[in-house]
Length: 450
Image (cartoon, rainbow, N blue to C red):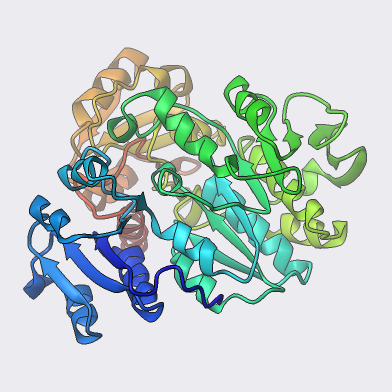
């Protein structure tokens, strides 16, 4: 990693722990900063904070005291999940203390260039595809971000001949200053996280930060089928590389005569792609564009696309039991993701859905529920989903306490040939810490049926 000196003897507050906070605090300590960590969880219940204390880092736990900001901090590194409406962040802005996220630190110390992926849906699949294509093409990629590995930890290990492929949320992108990916991808943009951002415009603005520092030396891969992504492209200084699933383009990535193509070159027949779902063609085209720009040859791209069947918790095939096929789509934390999942199947579906209530209704699902023979709901949004199910004409609608109970209930309602699909259309936080936990509980419950 780069031995930067910009943080030496600087007084820095790391606000919120989890993986990114621990990594940021440890890194800043190594770089010679005077680090204070503040986390809401009590110290006695906080092994991460205890570990930092043993390193000689100052730790304040149990509360976020605003008066802490009067201790002369020069910078705050914020956990991405902490909203800007938090009193600590408001107080920092009033005191003109800069606020960044851990991704900014990762960029500053990294010897390797970044390929950054953001968007409303498809980020994890696209990030994984880019990583696998670069790996198959001997480009020495490393993977980081929301996909499970902390960016600054990966950046510490990276060397100049690596490429860091990173999934980026709008929360992370709001806290960057100099971060500048060699290649940026915006998969698509829809309404999401409005409880955090407040407005659609502010959410899209956060996503657009991925290209704000790019120059004509970098690339922005953009969805040419959406006006909102094209608008971002028009204000970017990067080289624009479009992709489209709906039209043949003069350049970029597109589909023509049932082939995926890049810059007038046929790369692979669509029929040979293993990954199910029409919506995944967006992810495939954008990933292919990043791979081609990075110098990956067609044979490596073809090899990945013939064998890659998806990522964990994203339309993940789990098992077939007595003729019923089970799919885990726990990462479907919004309506559009569930729409894509429903569209991927022609067989009758038993849908398991529900979760955190963010104030929205689910009427957008109605046109896509025609193959749903039974609906099993759970969580805060169960009543809203049940209303939509009744309006659609679904005859069997059952409410259960949680995902674990939903699985045997679905099996009892099913017949051979049915698909049993967990695609919640909601975040998990009303009942589960993460969508991964929710998905793992579903998988375990399916295996218990055996």
